[in-house]
Length: 431
Image (cartoon, rainbow, N blue to C red; front, side, top):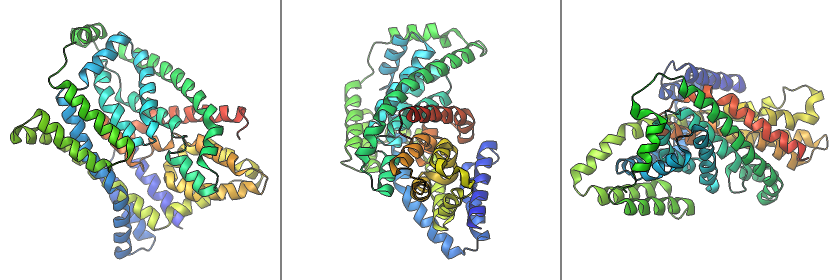
């Protein structure tokens, strides 16, 4: 019963987000409430689930508010303009080169294993470039998501850490075997980005003509001519570098670090309180909107987790396959890892589904590490198109994009990318 209700909640929310019938806040808050009531839980129980879920995302929501304000002010003072101009000049306005460069930046930015940090670093810097070249922000999200999928296989990232906790295998041991898959994944990513860039180039050529300033040639000319650095450039760059360095080191909580960094950058560029408040007000609506969506997502996850629906869904999914497919269960789950992450969430996938699959597969002599490889590689990009991921909502807010359109744009392409990496792992004998 919990599985049926939980699947109904998830399907309803995904359908509402895809069709854009209601705002995400309404879908994420109202639908789980109705499902919990149908399942027989009372107001007191639901209130507890809500508080638990909210606690899980509170830090992300607070970080989001101050991160958006911080990077918004950095954009206002022109910190990213020289970088953008340089990249545009180097690529000569070549959309394909920009798409491939996005993959490189996304891969490097995800060295710390944090999806939120990766989006915070890559999207604010690259989005203005995409806008100048009339490239789709959804392409930016797609390529950065694929980059995260590759780097999510490092031992300090979430998937391997979860899998290691479940199986008892050392995360470093798991990673060493998958390192060739990561290297191949990066090569695949470059090819992937080049093909997507070629497709995007064709789409841009079919767009209605705009004024001369919007053409790629003039964008490159403007970039080459705009060599003068904005005021206090090196000071603002130092503030940004120190902030990102502290985030990567983990010395201070991200939310508090962004709060402090916002104060420093405002004092450095806008000494008068009135000007400081004007900058905050300029970027506050978007930050508060997405923070409210993240909070609603926390309520949604709290209800599905607290009621036991997520665990029930993951367990039942492992039992619906025919008996003849049991020796290949880990491969089947790996192949469907991306859509399964959209149904169960990352935690449910690894903490509820993985133990069941590992136990069932072991009866047929399948090693535990093979189960981990199949499920992690097959699932490596699932979180990046899941409405259950706070980091994904952060990325959407930074890019000014919508979840429904992102899923429609990226789902099949990211699933294909995941399957190609899974096939390479199979050829290497990991599965």
